[in-house]
Image (cartoon, rainbow, N blue to C red; front, top):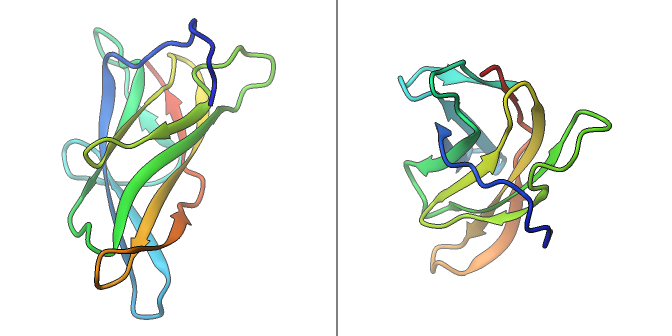
Length: 136
């Protein structure tokens, strides 16, 4: 994890919900939703706003008995730009916030804990890499 004290913390993140589960073929799936409930996919676009959003917040909804949001790993995608908090970010209460400065794009992998019927963690399950672009 980065220890750079100059890294920004998202103070006004764009809220996105994510539903995660295991299908009948024992394969994980992940669905993303905008604040209005509309289904969205990568790249996740943060809309322009006044004041502008400075990041994105992923919050897990629905069933958390099989897969539970544990953390996010994120990285700036534009070459030559300084870090925006590239880190392993732990989820708190099923939610994790990531800095995405205006006009930039980041790659993020959400990491879920897979639990058995007794609630014991048996695996870590990564999402396909959703990209986030801040149009603000």
